[in-house]
Amino acid sequence: MQLSYYKKQSYINKYIIIKSHGIPIWYWAKKIPSFLMVAIISTYQSTLSPDHGFVSLFTFGQCKFRPTCSQYTKQAIKELGVVKGLRKGWGQIRKCY
Image (cartoon, rainbow, N blue to C red; front, side):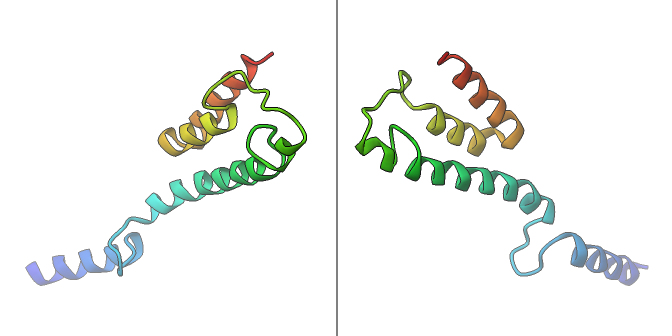
């Protein structure tokens, strides 16, 4: 009886948990969208942002919030996840206007 129980557990764990690291697959499924959104925001900051990027050479920093809206959104996504982080970031952007 005990032997079959252990075989069953190793068979289940093979598909649910990544063997080399022992990290569940759902963990990575939650982190990939937030990683992509943070990468998009970082690209925006380094190129088009009037406070952070290349455009800041031609404009003066015009954001009235510190941290800026993009930095706030990036922090919120890292802490809360994509949906809640974007919701908080959108609320911060709405306060500008």
